[in-house]
Image (cartoon, rainbow, N blue to C red; front, top):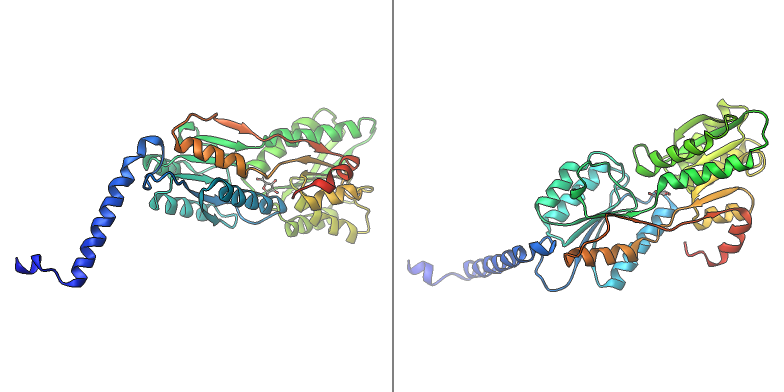
Length: 334
Ligand code: GYE
């Protein structure tokens, strides 16, 4: 008894710590109905963000946009790079749940397999915002909103441009396709949109289609194989600029002139891609904007405040020909 009243110094310290944790814990439960996961309600928002990786120029620009926008919005950002692996993203999301962040945002590396971890976030009352890429979960209550591009539309715009270019072609037009990362929404959707558009002209045929993982190295390597296996390639459709840029090296090494012998269509419109387009090495780019940071931070504030947000917010984008790329390049931010 006596011992209990006159605690030793380490015991006292432990008791103080325990009560601090307890108070923190009680406060943590206090704001759950605002949609926040339960950090102390000091008005400050903490966001846990799980990024796909650092596979492309697009991704680099997207990461910078998110970090800068968080600072500008006064949001504390916990950031994790998943290196293009779903298991790393699931681990990061579970960490954020444990840390009781206010909002979780992530760009899912693939579309499928998210229900369990999203359910865990929902049970912990931490709102989730999907950004850039979406998931195929049937239960739409597992996340608050999806902010990003319409990838089917991007693929369609790429295909429609080609249909227009080749409308007088009398013989077969052989197309090779460099797909994005297997299972990723932009890879699935761009493939679909492009295929739908080129179906308008039976002369247009995809003779080979393989993933280059959205990287320059992947684009180069797969294009080398395409060139070896197919003597007549008229068109390359690459699901992003980086794979197209990698493919340029393979095409040049094979003694062909990119943009002339092989028409090149890509998606993204990052600076290096736009430069290739302005130089006539690429022929057409469908834009995909990576500058999602400011909108994401706005959404985080709204969901934390318990406000309703639209289920889908689409990014505005355009397309570029060589002439348009020359005009746009000087003001291109990424
Ligand atoms: O097009 C590609 C990146 O998800 C829209 O991912 C993004 C895609 C982008 O690696 O360059």
